[in-house]
Length: 146
Image (cartoon, rainbow, N blue to C red; front, side):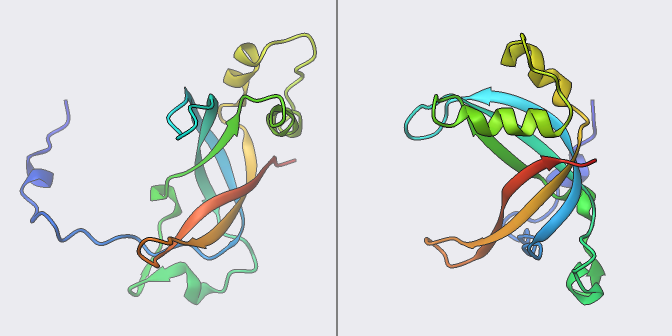
């Protein structure tokens, strides 16, 4: 079991929120997935947890810094949800096809584990939180990287 003692001794209430990443198409990987229905309408979905591997070429070096230090993309946690509704399943099918999964004759239950470790292009977008006017990140399009 990890030793949490040094983390637990840090002063509470002083953690700094990471700066939002600049928008762009980042190289990444599907790290894991989970099934859920925790949204307000209880619509079932699959959530893909994503890791970022590299910066878009269009991002200038100065935008890769936060407080003078290099932003570590490996520590950024992004996700993309796909809903299990008749009107939305085509988006999941599009993703599975783009990462090279042959879904013909298979169920989603059989296909989803095959998405793990797939190399993807992650469209990182910025949005403004309406409650606190802070800029955050969300994932737009997610496609396989050939």
